[in-house]
Amino acid sequence: MTERRDQPRAGPFLRWYYASKYRLFREEKREYDGNRGLIMLQIDALAFSDLRRAIERGYCPTIVRLLNEGDYNLRRWFCGLPSATPYCQAGIFHGENGGIPAFRFYDKPARRIITCNAPHGVQYIRDRIKSPGALAGGSSYVNLLDGDAQTVAFTVATREKMSVYQRLGGTRMALLMLLHPIRIARMILQSVFEYLLEEWERLRGELAGRVTHSEGIFPFIRIISNVVVRELQTMAILLDVYLGVPIIYSTFMQYDELAHHFGPSSKQALSDLRRTDARISEIWRMARIAGGRGYDLVILSDHGMTPARSYRVEFHESLGMTVERMLDGDVLASAAEASEYAGVGPELIEAVAAMTPAARAGTRRTLRRARDWLRSRYGLREIILPEKYRVAERHEVVVTYSSCLALLYFSADERQLTLEEIMANERRRLLYLGLLGHLGIGLIVTRSGNGVHIESRAGRGVIAEGQVEVTAGTNPLEPYGTQRYVVNAVESLVMQPNAGDLVLFGAYDGYNIISFDDQVGAHGSAGGDQVYPFLMSPVWLHADVAVIEDARDLNKVILRKYSAAS
Image (tube, rainbow, N blue to C red; front, side, top):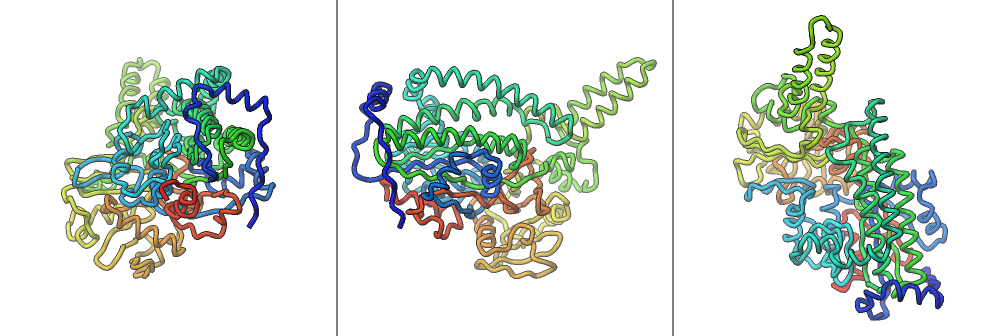
């Protein structure tokens, strides 16, 4: 076993400096109990392979230095399904992540959409977790769940009821901002730069035809996540390290936002890691010279990301519109013209064209070409509020999108339906067959009387107790992975409470996966690097040889060794 290195301590001047700087928080200083603390930093959605690319391109010098010192191991692990933050963080913090089948799903009995983009959706998940959280007595920053942490900021769902002000860090965060005027000034300047950079990159990408439009208010989300939140969470972590908080878990979410919109291996996503790497360096330096206790550092991602193509851009309609057309029996109709969003923009352009004098026939033709292009791709409302789920009350169907994973529910039945029950109904059977033949759908998973049924255009089979029996054609899981842990994860996913009656994976060609959201980087299902995040941990934790085949495993491999709840 490699021994932990002694950490260099601050000299008298630095001790005086930090004592003066954090004087307002001296009552929060923790008594050292002889136990080492843990700083666990999550880089959201960064796959093991993309971290290696970032390292090769020189974007992560702090991580490289730590690895070169010989005290850390770097490994790939399998996160389970869905490959999404709510499922993974629930497993990491609590060792319990059942009933979270996607980032967005539908509670049939309650007739309620659960979306983890909304606080009430994450709170729904938090309220149903019964196991104690591993962050008890510690801090949670920029996480979806609090893990029973004592101190939270930018954490969406908490054990105790809190106001929005408290969830954002409350008075504690406001005081920290006052103590860091230079950081705040830098933050303002960086925000302006980030906005200009986003506008330039979006324009360049649109002109070159390389990216879809930026979703809604993404430019402002980018400023908040890439500048404001990253600076504030760093300030909070530095304070906690000085105070000797025993366990600190924080998520750097910036890479995830950029990778969704520019691609997981894009320059935009990977180069931004340099700023996160600099914040990690700052935090680790604080732990070594002025930490309130000896700390171990763990850096990880909760899941990865796979390059993607937008379903709507590829097929000129949302998945929900496809489902409604099929239920109407209009399997071959042009989808884009039927979309409730797509008509707004084209109709405005057609109105201008109609008012154009006949003598300017060239202008009129140009306008109508623009109308046809817009109709095939974007609706005005869709650009502002992209469709994330569809409730088709007339057809009693609900469809939720979670990147490259979609869940379809027949909402007239409160219970989860089996394949046999679906096929016994003519309308539902035709919908199933229509989706199976659609080029955007790569796999349909359902419950059945003899196990979990998996089917694609290439073949079908049944999963029972972790084993696949191919009943026709080739194994439908071939594009997504046939390893034992992948098979187990697919079986577990469809059997989860709240999973759809149909579980749909976007078609995967070995490089790109179809995303049901407008994204060029996706995660949620299996296929590619989205299920293979990274873990960098001290060698003395022996995490490099541990079996980690679900986010739940990290709870016992790492967090429970430091948790006050264990």
